[in-house]
Image (cartoon, rainbow, N blue to C red; front, side):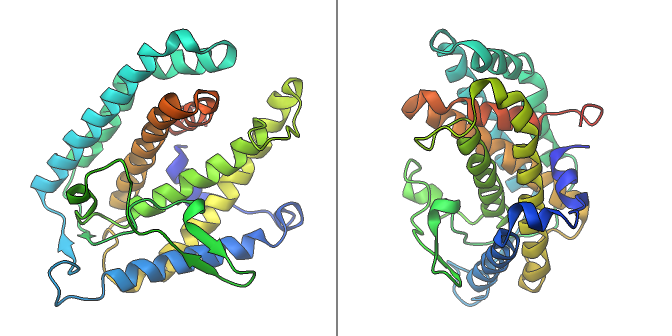
Length: 276
C-alpha cells in the first residue's frame, strides 16, 4: 500500500499511547491549528490577493512541468555527487537513480483528472521549525515562504495540501534525525540500525496519520480541499515527493552527511504496493 494510503488507513493500536505518550494529543492540536491557519487565509474573498481561486487544467499542467523539471535537476545533482557518498548512502542513492523514470512519472498523476479544489495563500515553508510550542498550544511563525525562491513565486496561490506535505516530511525528518544520530549524541549504534528503523517508520506513520486526520477534520469548512479522496491522494503524493527531492538538493548542497534522510524518504514514497 502506498505511503499516502497507509496514512489514511493506519490503525493506531491502544498501546501506541504508552509508547509515544502525550505527543499524540499534541500532534492532533497541531493538525487543528494548521487547518485553522488555512481556513483563515482562505476567508477573505473580497481581497484579490487572498481570495481563493479554483484549480484549472492549465495550472495543473504548469504544476506538472515545474515539479518534473525541478525533480530532474535534483536527480542530476545527485548523480554529480555520487563520488562523495559511501556505503548504505551510496546504495540508496543508486536505488533512487535506478527508479528515476518511475519517480518522474509519478507527477503525471496531475494530468490524469481534473482536480476540484481551490488554491489559496499558504504558509509556504511549513515544518516543525516554524511552530513554537508554548506548553499548551502552538504558535506558527515565519510566513516569508522558502527563502531560496523568488518573492513573486512565493506569492503564488497554491493548495494548502503543500503545507500539509511539508509538515508530514518534517515528522519523517524528526524520526530519522534521531535514528541516524544527527542530534549530537547518537542513541542508536550503527549495528542496531536495521532493528530500529522499523520503529522509526511506525512512529512516523502513526504520528503522520494522526496529524493528517486531525487536519482534514478541521479544514473541511475552508472549502479548499479536493472534492474527492482520489484527488487528495494525488496532491499529497506529488507534494510529498517534490518536498523530499527539494530536501535532497538542500542536503547535497549544505549538509552532505544528512543526505541519507531524504533518500530514505524518497524510497519509502516510491515503495510499490506489493512491497509495502
